[in-house]
Length: 221
Image 1 (cartoon, one colour):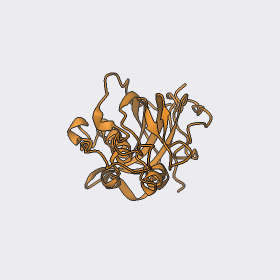
Image 2 (cartoon, helix red, strand yellow):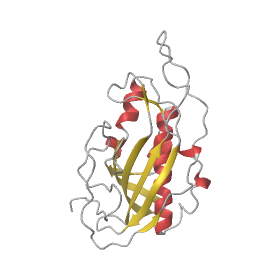
Image 3 (cartoon, one colour):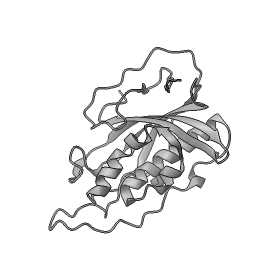
């Protein structure tokens, strides 16, 4: 069966086939018609935690003689900040996907994607593409500067392919990152992310079996 993520008519939901990591300049995603699903949703109010940081302030080039500073000692996302992520429930799936996204953002900060890989299935659809920017900046030793995430909305939706789909939209605080050239970083303002994950329940708990993401300045409009 061809893999696909079934989405409800939510804010900036993703349709399978979009590029996993946009350059921030792509078109706004148009939500598909309401398919009749009744997602369990969170309005995202107040979920602003440093465990979801996405860049490493000391890890970037100093812009002077070209030397790269050592990666900062920033704590990894704490599973305790995502209560219920080990439970076989819709809420648990949402928390597990948020944790996965947090580890991916943290990887860009400190240059360590081991926690992200632990959450992925062996044949995860789109995971390699999702982490392409991480691989690019690691190759150039040019980590992003620190930022935090602010949840906009999250929801768990029924899926015909996965045990459940989770849509998670959030914004990031201003920081410095690479946009087109992974060897350079530039100042960026608040960015918007729309992400979707297909999750499966395993003996080890929830695992990410598919992921899509789109980011930019107006993807949540």
